[in-house]
Length: 317
Image (cartoon, rainbow, N blue to C red; front, side, top):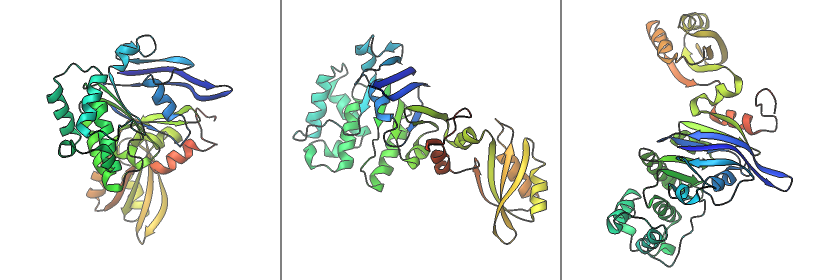
């Protein structure tokens, strides 16, 4: 488990990180989302012990990063945005070198073979790193982070500069790692977070402005739990039918998409999943559902709302 409490990083009069607190549970993939300059990398660097905080604590499985740095850092695998690679080494020689630097206690050959297999580098292990593509260099950086099987992985913007095919492969790789590791995944790209993570922390101007499930990001802003659904059928009949679903509090027509077809915003009680109920009542009344999405606004809209100058946090921002 990773526990961050009241983290502050100050440079003169500027607070790059301002009173940031959150917890990442074992086996969780947490998305750390924010615009460039929001404080993501600074927070990541403090968590890994690369830089110190002005105030606050970071605890990795009961080891505080400043009081017990050796134990805390031994439990972290870190992939910075620009991996520190030795370009004239082969992939395997580099991993053997990093294995020794990290003083890993596992059987050397077997463990490196395993890491090469997980990162799909086995067929490239004898190639010189400078001759690899950007995507494969990122894999080498990830492979060194996995040496020693650390329980916590910190990945700072790992897909920056990759082409769409490489990004897709990296997403699959990270999701697989989440089965055995706690992962903190930093990005400013919305599609990355939504594809990989269930929970997201949004940071802006050094402060956390949201900490919620990706699917509930809209609700975190509006204070309402909503479902957006596009249905074919008369407006009055659809509205009446949806209002019979348990937990529904209000149904509003947002816009017409085509003849006899509308988009509705359905407000409902917090903590209740009404999707099955809406589906069943629409099917019963022969009213086809064309689209259905949780939240009253898209992830992009929610992100822009949160990170704009007028973003609302606790009613004031």
